Length: 315
Image 1 (cartoon, rainbow, N blue to C red):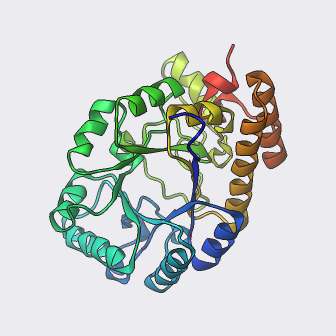
Image 2 (cartoon, rainbow, N blue to C red; image 1 turned 90 degrees about the vertical axis):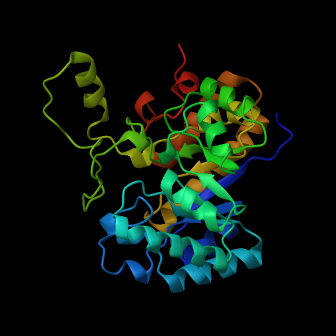
């Protein structure tokens, strides 16, 4: 724990071209999704990886090229198989998908469904499985449960505060953790969300505008969220505390987004890491990091797009 350990940058990738460009930018790890030919009878809505659109899906050819490149460059690639809901007849197809990915040389599987994890563990008791945020590990007791299934790495929920992250990491020895740092913050706890994310413009339910007649408190929160683009969420102001917590990797969201968008996000996190190391005064550091955000997105950040508002917007 502490500043000695280098924290990794974990970036999404959707094809071979992007993988090559992101590796050149200096990412430490990559993750992505695969929609195999065995799923040809299903729509993208029933993909195995929580993405309902084609742009976030590789086919076997693109996947194999990407894996080969990552192995040549010694960059870990993790395949996302984190769908929670699927048809019963899809289960053997998803297990075959996991077998194929392992055979091709992925470094690990990102999974969120307990039944899928149990089935993969039957055939591959020791292969690295990373727990998706979809599994909703909100405390160290949940992490301990999955540790019994030989899960060695956990993606922490977007809803967790720095204090909660530190507590989970401290009480979960021999487990590595990722935390989200850029893009995709959500007002809901993902593993408990049953809203449909199928809008062709990729404007998700929490961003859409509603006429709401419920409680005043919920109404105020919804008014802040509606119309806001989750693709500009950020947590770089919390990097210093994240490093101190012992988290292993900063995870950038963005599967299905353009290559240029992914590259600029990696550059932003790299700049933020440099500033975090150089500026010791916390107030000046936060100010400098907010300026970085402004340079990237051309507007000021706000508490609803901040992963760690207790740092970026402390009173």
